[in-house]
Length: 280
Image 1 (cartoon, one colour):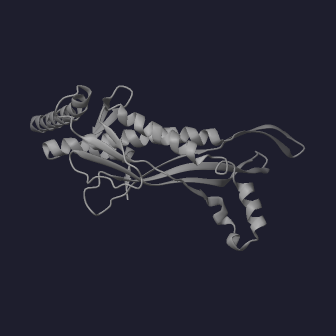
Image 2 (cartoon, rainbow, N blue to C red):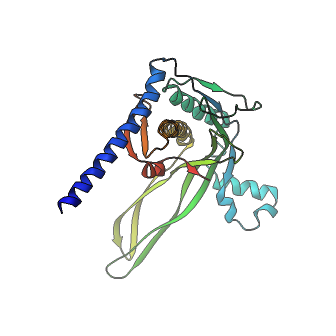
């Protein structure tokens, strides 16, 4: 029993020491830019997104939609669209890009915005690269139902649609070879519904409904949030890979706080990666 206890203590100490070492290297990376040291030579080269793909997935459920007369298509599109047709792409992209660049600037790492018709430099230890391959805005309606059965066995139902709006982002990050690994992240907002039965009289139910509908302002808020999250997750990726280059391995995932330009928390690497970009 004593041997097992000593073994667990030893393992715990090794994990603590390893985590502390990882934290030191990641923290030193941030500090060297904050302090303007001579070894702060890395730069981030960014190709910002220049266009958006619009997708209304609700139209996929309409059999033969592509063969309908144009005026019928326009009518169906209008009936199933509330946000995509109101989003200004230029505003959305500006909100996203401005927030992405702002969060990167918090690290004090020099950022170079590369024109979309110019090549990114070859990524290496000094040239960090971010290439937004594609951004998609998706809107769709989710058929939903609230129902219940009374104690006497009467069944009531109320059918309605909940609108969803999502942003999908595909990126290439610090591409050092020709494998072209693509990373992906997404976020979504949706309508909210609350229904309260106010009375059951004469065999009929009275339902008070309250819909919290999403609007185009929610889309722009999502653009800012996605820019923030993409930059934050990218900084966390940079920290992890820097530690790996310095030590030869890394078992720690760093939660980065842009407001203080500090590491807010650490997690085991595999656990932390669940909150990062998805590798496709």
